[in-house]
Image 1 (cartoon, rainbow, N blue to C red):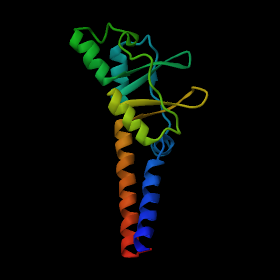
Image 2: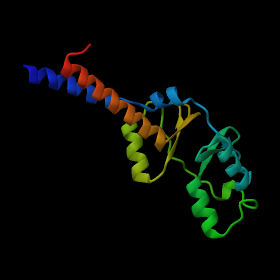
Image 3: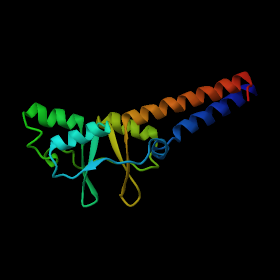
Image 4: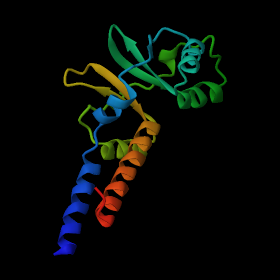
Length: 163
């Protein structure tokens, strides 16, 4: 009987972990989205990224997301090709056809996408395809660590009988 009770509690904790969603990250992190238009120079975009201490920018034209630009794009598509950041427009380097998630996407799904597709930023869109946030691999990892701490605390409280 005790084993059954422990199994039930453990399964509930695992379900709690699996239910973590993108909205949980955004509620803590905030919904700020940093963006530039596709006609700005790469230099301007990098300045903005430094100013905001972020690794990627959403590229927005006429209120709609048309791409994303990250530090990885800068390194692989500009530096290694010998282009100038002051002469190159962001639309030449941005990643188009961006994969997005919704606030209801699970953290587990985000981890899988980021690992499988090898990228570090996921724009978040609502049911109307409006951009409502951006999460990074750091946000996902931080959420998982916090969830694991919570699970450990619940298990410790259960095992020790603490309230």
